[in-house]
Image (tube, rainbow, N blue to C red; front, top):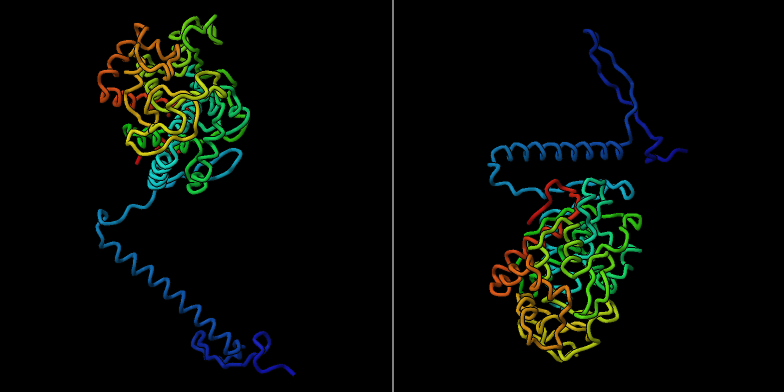
Length: 384
């Protein structure tokens, strides 16, 4: 016997009065069980409520001036041939990431290695290949995070920088690796007392090891008096070597000197570059290396170019110019040539005497380097 409350089988018959062409008919039709009928009525009521609410909101918005409406975040969908669709970060997301990087670089005293990571990623650009499809032209595309590039000789130690940035990347998943590296570099400069650099974001990322450039794009150096022959690229002098490397990127003599000034930060480690001392009185862990006088050093060892190697200022130029500078401070042949070469010397003297001029020119050169070879997910890039 069928249960009285079965929703699938129990029906009642209802007489419906239908008027068709002036004739009245009575039709027997099944109607759902009352429980089903109540559910249908509820569903229709909810639909009417949502529809009427939307119409009321639309009508109300018609009376709100456009200037009073909060702007919606601008997102751009970008498609990769191998990784599919992903959303580019919004200006607010880039800003939040940058502000975290400022705190991160200051807290961890890691600005020098963050700057080096970004520069070595961007420094593979070849202006002669500018017309080639991305990322074959090299540049700031994040390819340095892959092998074999991260294991190139000039990149020794930079895997540590990638490990440092890993947790930041997880907290800001919409920010690509190429952007994250360049943002970390700019934040490192600002966190150590340097200027805020006018950066653009929205770079496309290289996608795998196949996008890595060949080795040999970055500058080398020697200790004064150690050079016994030409550099690996065949250039006979330090100045010629710097020009060959940086002019290949499309940078100028002024850019070379301004960017050299970033050696006010950091140290050379013998186990990485084969240059410098194992340790000095400035890198034994007891020296105050920050510009604000707070404790903070980073790892021990290595040889710095300046006494306050966690302070961004023009002391690199004053130290390189000073023949009586402490011999515990590093001077490479590629450092000394900026005062010895006629083309470099005017800029080096200018920056030695005028820190504000150095900061202004440095911002331009740093931003230029950070954009080499970049392909933008959003035309013209994103600023905040």
